[in-house]
Image 1 (cartoon, rainbow, N blue to C red):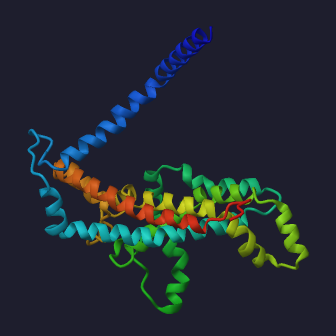
Image 2 (cartoon, rainbow, N blue to C red):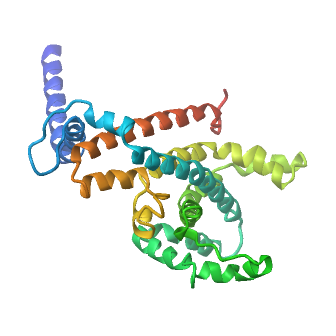
Image 3 (cartoon, helix red, strand yellow):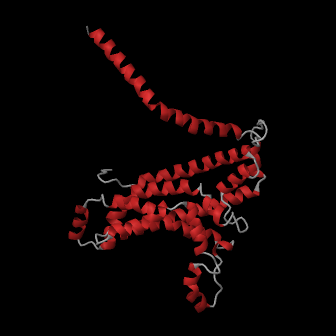
Length: 307
């Protein structure tokens, strides 16, 4: 009797397992076709001379050797990307935290202010780039018009912003701060999850506002800080649209990012094999840096952590 029950139960579980796979099959099929297959194909093409016109020919590690030893523009694009990430990610984190601290106040109309600061994140990157292209225009742009009293006082020429190879990197970094509201929302959500009893206990102990921020708020925000830091690193290595629209990678390749170079290899040079090799090099670089960033988890403080 028990054996029959076990067989019936096993049959039922098998049927449930099959039904589970059937219901999950649309997602699994999409994952294989749109995810696994393109990744595997790009890995194969990175060892070929495929130009999107003829059949791919296997050339082993030639693409990687050319990129790493005979392509100076490869290192220029990589340096520009690393420079951009090294400054924009920490600066974006700092601005996002400051905004969250300011918008965590309980005053009338705070929801409107939070919405205003978050709105740039729903604007398309193309529209945002065109807007800032006008704002940073050296001759008639709003930024230089607002700074004209400073220029006149110090008797200096207006900054050329994205038209100068010295200022172009900084210009795109400053422009990126306009979307700091995206990380601000995450910080704000975690900030509001901090128990008020901790602040009340700090008040009893005589702690001032700055002490409460650095001893309570910031430590309990470390999970979201590390999350936004890693997210910023991964996103920073994929930046392309802004430099493509605003500067075309210039002037003098000063904003020619790695993803832009990969795009040119694929679309302008038809060098799909070389572009695939660049994609896998980027994957390795991003993976190494992300794994290094994950080591910051040992400094993360979780509420209720007894360690």
